[in-house]
Image 1: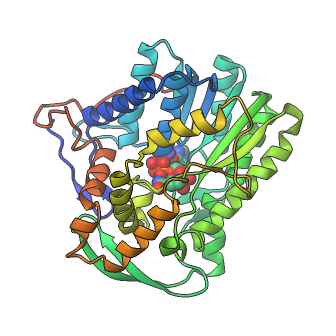
Image 2: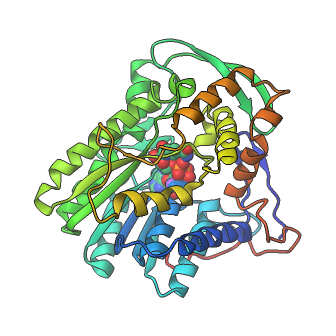
Image 3: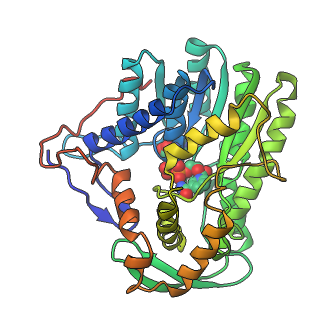
Length: 396
Ligand code: NAI
Ligand code: NA
């Protein structure tokens, strides 16, 4: 069929298999162009199909020749109905990895469940024995805790007071004022239950208990800090509480891994257009201003550039892993540069529907958003008839 983007709110209902494939191939080529990394050899990526998790899987495989297992939650295609983009991304990745002689298998299911954890452990035992890296890169609005059976839903709200500031609808380019009422205690707890570190710790506990973690094992989860303009809704809001919890969990995990010389890290990453971030109020406006400045400075990065730098310059240098005063790896260092941030603040004040196309990179935002679903990618023929039903070669 001929596949076109069909938007509804913050999501696109369709995805293009060839576009997603090209996207993955472009990322693989980028990693190959940067040369070999003396990195991990057997890797589990939880949240492996899109965004930072996909970039981590690609960097592991094509940067340091690792065998990879991916866990994700994606909608398979049906005759006449496209899959979600992570499905096509994974199909492309596993095809390319297997072509390159690299082990690549995956599990499509709810990573928060005991079943998927058990299935993953069985697969590691059968095929890899032990793993030396786990990347934890889930972004989800909902989690059922397998111990309690309770389903938690996260909210993106400020804490303590109503937040009012500018936001942009990136589809229309209209800048307007948004007001968000503060979260109550229960909403805060629910958000921490979904996006905090509890499930990450459960994964590491289960993997360790099963004896599948190699000596010197490392695990990394992804966090975000960001600037003052997004603080009320992000870092000091409900999601920020979850990130506080995630960051604290890195220390808990490190303690638990002492006997196998293991380490848990959080890496603070740059703000980027992903399915997760486009749903957060205010963030798209911030990103469109940030992109404009970082591109002008020649320091703009996407997920793949970020993760390549994480591996090459942070995790797998010959020396100690560089961290900040709170023990966190920082690859948001260029985003947070004083000169970059002071310019964002200036632009923020002047941002209106009329000025944004010139002072911000709204076009870049839109392109990145379409790219997530495999649209608007150079070299892809969108008039051509494509088969929407694509198999994932390593799907267990
Ligand atoms: P994303 O939406 O691109 O990726 C989410 C991944 O989680 C996908 O692979 C999806 O299939 C998987 N997933 C979701 N629910 C699942 C479930 N129940 N079971 C199994 N898999 C599931 O998101 P993104 O942006 O790559 O986020 C990953 C992490 O990076 C998050 O912790 C996020 O907070 C963090 N981060 C994101 C930044 C951004 O600007 N996008 C910046 C800094 C950190
Ligand atoms: Na991800």
